[in-house]
Structures are given as C-alpha cells and as structure tokens.
Length: 381
Image 1 (cartoon, one colour):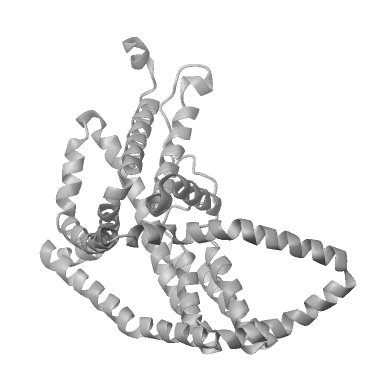
Image 2 (cartoon, rainbow, N blue to C red; image 1 turned 120 degrees about the vertical axis):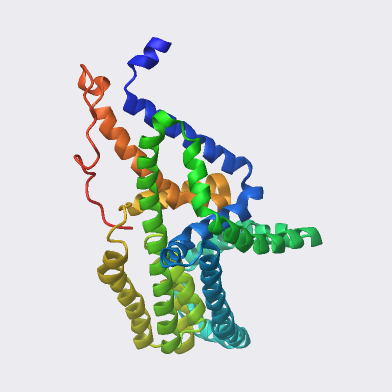
C-alpha cells in the first residue's frame, strides 16, 4: 500500500486530499445545517464586508474601529431602507388589497366572454379541460399550500420557535461583528493548521478559490442591488401595482442568471394589464426589464465582474438546484460559492490528469499550470 502511495502522482494525491476535505465540510454542513445557519450567515456577512474593513485598516484605523464604522454604515443603509422603501411597499400592498375586488371584476369582464366563445365553439374539449384543471387544482393546491407555509409554520408554531427565530436574527450580526474583527487571526489560525508539506500548494488553491468566490459573490450582489433599484423605480414610475416590491425581488433574483426576468417580468405584465389594460404600458414594462438586462450585460457585468472567474450559468443553476434539494436554505446559500470552488479544483485536476501516467500511457510529466492550458471562455453568469 505504501509503495502504491509512493508511486501516486503528487498532484493527483493533493487533489484527492482537497476533495476529501471538501466532502467532510459538506457533510458537516448537512448534519448541522440548522444549528450552523446563524453562524454561516454571519460568516457570509463578514466575508462580504471584510474588504471594506481591510481598506480602513490600511489607512491607519484599527481593525475594531474599522468594523464599527462599516457596521455603522450598514446600519444607516438598513435604517434608510426600512424608513423609506418599506413604507412605500406597504402602501402599494394596501392599495392592491383594497382594489382587489375591482381587479377581479376587470379580469372577469375580459376573460368570461372569451371563455364563453371557446365553450360554444368547442363544448366537449372545453368541458374536458375544465374537469382536468379542477382535478389538478384539487390535487395540487393542498401540496402548494403546505410547501409554501410549512417553513413559516415551523418557525411560528410555538412561542419557543418564534423566540429561536428572533435570536437567530440577532445572532447573525453579532457573529459577523466578532468574525470580522478577528478575520486576520482566523485566517492565520487556519493556515497554521495545514501540514507544512502541503501548506504552499494549499494556500495557492485557497487564494484561487477566494478570488473566484469573493469576486463573484460581491460582484453579483452589487449588480443585484443596482438592478433592484432600476426595476423598482422604473415599474413604480410606470404605475405598476406593487411595482417597487416586484422590481426589488426581480433585481435580487438576478443573482441566479436570467431568473430576474423570469420572476419579475410575468407578474409585472399581469399587474400592469389588470390596472391599465394598455398595450403601451405593457411595452413600457418590457422596456424596463430589457433596458436593465442590457445595462447588466454591456456595462455592469464587464465592469464589476471583469476580474472574476467566469462561471457558466448552467453550472450556477445546477449547483443551486442540487444545494437546495440536499441542504435546503443552507445549500442554496453556499451553492454558488461551492460551485466556484469546485470549478477551480476541477481545472487543476484536468491539468494533473493530462500530465499523469494514466492519461499519457507512460511516465508522468510535471503538471502544467492551469494558465498554460486555459479553460474555454464561457459567458459570465
């Protein structure tokens, strides 16, 4: 066994060790996902804010003071959102609720004549379709209600659950604050835990993963906030009911490629049609989303994500689906960063494999660096 390990290509051996470590971390997150969620959210928040604190630290501020200043700025932003944006959203929701009977009458006035014409022209097919739809609704509706409110019901089913939920919300910024203050110490401690023979190569891989994850995560979050503002303001100016809420949701959904249009365009078109029943308004709604997507594709992504490791949209979507299926909310939170990290290791594994004796059928060669055999260009997510 020792002789086999001695003959194993060192590059492949290192990659196997990294893969085992990644699997161990994934298993830990899975089995302790409920307990670790506040800590994980705090770690993500600290990771996002660390460059700002580091920037202040380089300009003579202490780490603690820099953290306090960054959290103060974050508190101002959140307070401004709660005092300015939330009341507008609440006003729009109340207005839609009050006018719901009027909207229902409008929809019925538009659809009922068309449905009557279809019923007269195709009575058998219409009746069969009606029975089928009623059956589907009866079968699926309880399922949808259960899945939609199951999570909230689990949280608020008892006073203890509500208390734990509120404590989780409080602990997230607390964890983030202390992690942010001790971020350099934490990184040094983790580095010192790596065995010395593997330390140099581990730091190189971690640096690549950090570059991929940080640039993608912070870049996509910045783009999402910009698109949320553009969509929300644009839909509100056009007069779309709940336009600000729909625009904000669509903007942040854009962190998943193309999901912003899927989530936001259909509700915005439907609400605009119910309110105005005007082709011009529908064109204006489509123009808001088209303009936002063009801005994102031609200006925001090239400028903000120019230095990031490109992750194919299919890989992003697949990682989010798998993460959500396996680990729920925690899996969706870590899906894209994990995909970026795996992409780095896969690229090195391919290079090591092509230089190994297994692939070449002879003596192994010194692996080339990934830069010497770059991955094919793919569009940014």
